[in-house]
Image (cartoon, rainbow, N blue to C red):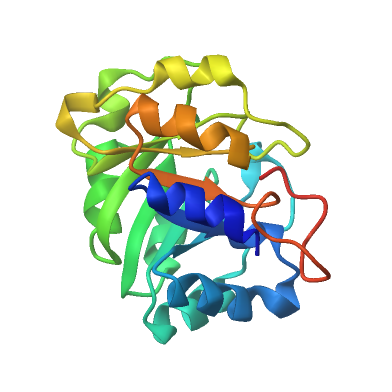
Length: 211
């Protein structure tokens, strides 16, 4: 783990979440335990449908993580959000629902999510201004600083300008974060930072992840 990056996030008063998609499947549970040991979260991406067919954190892995008791945020970038919400285990800290392709009423999705998690956030692509309806009722907003679910991108600093305290809700960032970006992210008002490939190093790292 990149201790320098983690320490910068923590010293800035933000919550660190490690994207398990950046870790080889065999090492994901150990990576999650390492995150929890330092007070960080495990972030589990589920990608499918119109967001592409990249490998995701599996439902069985999510169930094991939830049973372990540490904070887990499941980020759903899928078309069948209802199906996934109904399949998820209880005991999650958060479910984040990516918003660009939603066809189901967000209020219904948030209600379903709260049956599985303590909080429900909505993910938004900062390159596309979200409609007010897309974030209505959410406990927070996760701003994607790279195209959602697209590998190989680094953080676009211009996307930080899109961050705002949506109706007083907390905001977080996800995508392409490096240690050198932490100061600007903190100044933008974010309270939660998802990091993947810049955080996980060594043989456990999954090289092809976008985070």
